[in-house]
Length: 395
Image (cartoon, rainbow, N blue to C red):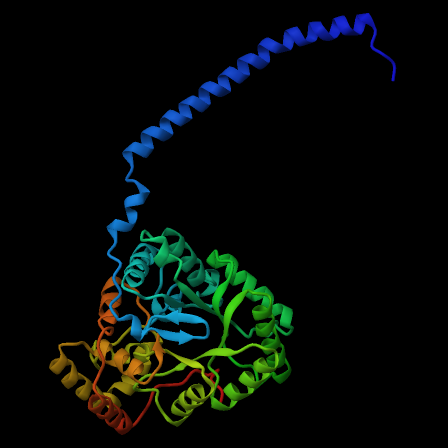
């Protein structure tokens, strides 16, 4: 390389002298702006409440004893969880986005009172709101104003829908990663197959099982579960997963005083035999067991048509529930949910507002007597009609 000439060196020094004041001015300006930003930040930090005190604004006290916690695989969960089917569902539950602030309060209240299991699904949310339930849970976990210790003990159980285009194990893995992204999590506590495809697509069913096992092997989920599987299918999927070195930790079915027939009780027996925890969804039978409805006061939408048919048939059961409520100073939902816990299941009632959340929490910290359980089940057996079952439920 040739050395620069004297003329080039002189020109270079001249250019540097002309640039230096310009650079110095801009460096000084940036420094002044930065000092101003720091002053503003200090001012607003002084004005706003300190984050350290945020946990003191929420009373974190479980409503149950530590001995009542339930094992789901490697997890220790509260004896009752919270289902989020309604969060994002306009068709059945009348969701709208103006409800989000109160749903956040529902979440905060539940967590502060010891609820650490939240059930959701990648299909929860209608139309453009598909996946909304997972998104809300992710936001609420991040915004929880309590302690890090409590926040870090929250367990999310989500479900992967058996959509017809999910025909490969890798499709289930991709679905799991999508849920993790919406939830803002690195790992799910429980990954569940939402329903079985065995009745109409047995080859797809095998792919779903292998996909769930792959999620476990890749560390995307801590525990594997299924939903809407009957006793026969439970045995099949448990055996298949066992062959992959994956224990089946949970099985979720519709289970309540109006959904406790031979199939449900056999599923519960299989779970007990195989060491699987049964998660009871719809423990209030879509609200039919809440005691809030009559033939003259029905919910809007499809639930109203269903309740109009069922209410006359379940009056004996509602009558017995009412007697127990008065004797114990409890409400109908509290008795219905507590019965599920007495049967050894983890119920996951939903809550759309603070009133429902507070009422559901009243099911914790006590147990029905054996005589009361038998009385309720006797009345339930006398009901001429039971709850309509999920169309995806298998045998």
